Image (cartoon, rainbow, N blue to C red; front, side):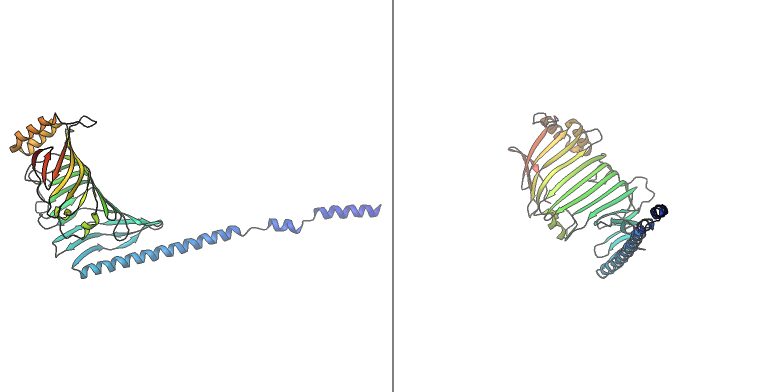
Length: 355
């Protein structure tokens, strides 16, 4: 009897004693500390890498500026500082500029801010503060102001794949007439874009409410304009090696006017599209479709610009009543150009000047 009681007590005491397994379960885990340490280490390595890239960027800018200076070009990026930590890397300058004394080109502006995402360093976005001073041959010195001016570029070799420039509330004045309230030109919004896939290049332009001062263009008063253009050049890369700064650089090019459209304030407008080529002597050839939205409205605008051609413009508008219409009901005229000579069917209507 006593032996049985002792056995029961021993079993009971044994069942209440903590086991070594239970002790192990209750010990605090070291996993959170290890994970936390790894996170801190990764952050330190990332930070060190970012500052290394930032230092390389600042050094590269200084090297490039020095290289341009040896070529006689004063490239300006004052107080160049890397920025964008932690998810971007970019460059800030308190003032930027480009001065080429040999070519007589000088452009200076305010601060520059540019940045690229760490995971996509070839796509760079930037913004520039105004105003800017511009001097180019054949044009009076200009002051340019804007509300916003932004660029986007996709780097690639040998040349960028994509470049766009977009601005809003742009105003251009002659620098020598700072007190003149009439600006040479104002524009509400505008965008210029290049997309390249060697050797092809696509160029797109769009602007809204562009107004030139009277007699600035063609020495004639022009109405407020809104427009867009999309041009594809089959060998656009060849333009980059040409020294010319006028339309003569297009000699030897072929391409397509996907859309060239100009609209006037009353809703009327002109649209041109079609393939073209430019011979080595600058003569243009192509097959174009010219569409007039509200021909009477277009005639009024053109007669105000070219009053000496009043009768000719009226005759053309009357003839548009008999030409085919597009899906919107606007008359569309097919025009063939061969070596600069324009014709509608077998009727010659004039000659384009050589580019």
